Amino acid sequence: MKPVGEAEIRGSFVNCSKGEARRINLPRNLPELSWTDLDFLGWRDPGAPDRGYLVAERNGELVGVTLRVAQEVRRSFTKSTVCSICVTPHSGTGVALFVAPRIGAAGRQGNTVGTYMCADLACSLYVRGVKRTDSGVRFEETLTTEERILRAAVNLEGFLDKVFDGDVRSA
Ligand SMILES: [Zn+2]
Image 1 (spheres, rainbow, N blue to C red):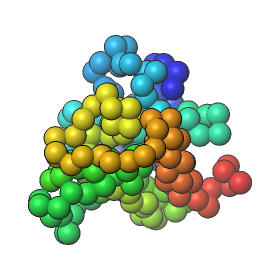
Image 2 (tube, protein in one colour):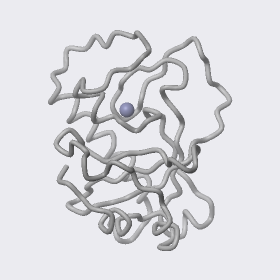
Image 3 (cartoon, helix red, strand yellow):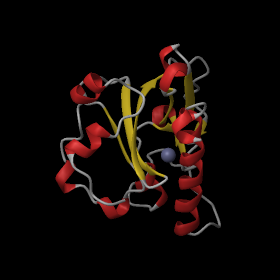
Image 4 (cartoon, rainbow, N blue to C red):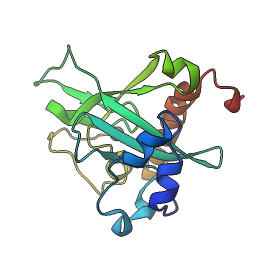
């Protein structure tokens, strides 16, 4: 993705109030990020461990989504789990269930969308092999890096569509 600055990021959030967007803790290393390795910007809140954020391009516009880590009931520490976006297998706590408030009236009524995702939201780096999991799970796939990037983009688009579902602006 192309590099974006603090103002653009704060202005991109669609599923929280403007006040909330102003108070979001941004990644500390924003200017040094390797943007060419990123399909979207994802990070966990350094000040609030149960919160995460992702900022991505959707239909040519920058879209930011706030996420919250859901309490898990079926967590298994022996089984590996797979990210629904980038399909990277992790063990233990490497994958988390994130929920995002839907935008608009649905979200204000408490309606959320959930997805299992790499707990550090670094999907872009896993698909490129820039970052490796500590699971020891070998990723045996015949897909090329480009194909994995494309698959993650399609999965992310599907998730964002659900966050936007029912909103008149997305029609
Ligand atoms: Zn992932």
